[in-house]
Every structure is written in C-alpha cells, then in structure tokens.
Image (tube, rainbow, N blue to C red; front, top):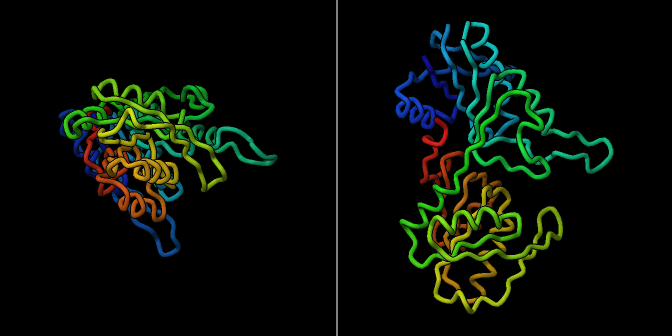
Amino acid sequence: MRIFIPLPGNETLAADLARLSSSALGTLETRHFPDGESYIRLTDDVTGKDVDFVCTLARPDDQILQLIFAAKTARELGAKTVRLIAPYLAYMRQDKRFQEGESISSTHFAKLLSDCFDSLITIDPHLHRIADLGEIFTIPTKVKHAAPLLADWIRDNVENALVVGPDSESQQWVEAVAERAGAQRLVLNKNRLGDHEVEILVPDLSDYAGLAPVLVDDIISSGRTMIETAEALIARGFRRPYILTVHALFTGSTYWQLNQLAKDIISTDAVPHETSRIGIAELLL
C-alpha cells in the first residue's frame, strides 16, 4: 500500500497524487518549539507501507530538517520504502568549485537526500555541468519533463505563437515545445554582464511580424533574462508576450516586474504560485 504525505505547502499536490493513483493521503503534524526547533509527528500508521513524502524544495533551508526528520521517522516506524517526490530540486546550481574554499553544495545536498530516501523523483532539475543526477545521487532517481505540458497549453491557448528562448541554453527546450505546439521558434543570444545584469541580443525579426511571442524557460528566479527579453521584443513592435515556466520561484519583485510586461504568466504547480495553471501530478506517478 502506498501513502502520500505532504510537507507543509504541498497538500494540494499530494492530494492529487493520492487521488490519481487511488492511494492513501497522509498528514504530517509540524510545529516549532519556542526556541525554533522543529516538531514532527506522523499521524498515520506507515508500517509495511510505501511512503512518498511530497515536498517541492523551493525553500530548502527552511524545509530540509523537517523533511529529514519525517523520512527517518517513517523508516523507524517500519515503512517498507521511503521515497521523495520533489518537483523542484534545490541546490543544483553550485556543482563546481569556482573559487578556492567554496562548497560544492550540489554533491553535499545529494548525499544528504541519498542517506534518507530510497529513491527520488523530480521535474526538470536545473543542471549545468552535471549530465545526470546519478552522478551525485547514490539512490535511484527519475527525472520527468514538463515541456510537453507547456507545449499543449500554448497549442490550446495561443494563436500564431512564436516560441522564444532567451539564450542558447534554452534551445533544446524551445525546439521541443515549439515542435509539439506546432509553432514557430526563435532562440536569442544573451551576454551576462554580472550576477544581476544581462544583455539580450536580438536579430532582425521582420520575418516574425504579427506572431504572438511566448517566452519559455524551465525556471524563473531573479527573472532578469525574461525581463530583458520581454522588453527587447516589445521595443521592436511585438505585442506583450506570454511567459511560461516550469518552476516559478519569482524572487523579490520579479513577478511584479514581469507582470507589467506580460500579456499573461503561466507556470506549472511544481512550485505553487498564483500563476500555477498547469498541473504536473500525472508526471509524478
């Protein structure tokens, strides 16, 4: 028997997974002691069950201790297997020591999770120099891709779409989404001028006049690339673009800034947000 147990903030996704798989939905009692320490209690009998903890790791430093305590408690109480469903997987950025003394946090985070869980499933991890999660995890990992879901949304909602990627890193994404959506595609070039400043290089776009731009990327965090891309397209006479992403992190004022430029902003519910209109539960089963 399988039971899905959500960490705080993941209740809706866990309920969808339980419903779609005809499995049980569990609950986790959490609170903080006056000194800030976490209290964890599994309210369901997990003996002999396959326990899936559901926790998108968009705020990993706030979530990780509760997640570890819950996983270890489930194992102590006789769970048959303990799996992590993390639609957004954090700490994949720092996969190299760029300066002397830096922590390669991706490998440490992977070891931490590998020590607590039997397996992991995630969606479109933001990998750079790591080609496969198996390079840093010692447990079985499964990666699912949300590009088809974004493509289907574009096909069903945008006429004469032009799928736009802001840089060469997005090319594979853009090609997959545009092909499935039956849309034209365009990949721009980006110069990174610093940690928070980018320059988008836009070629002659006269061949795309009249099309509806749809900016796609796997993750939007600070949003500088998307903001600069949207501004560049609007400056060249295009209508306000749609913006689609899998992982809507939207740090600081990013969402507000993008909202001033976009016709609409749509994300999956891999990271719950008011823009979440594309469900990913079926990908995770």
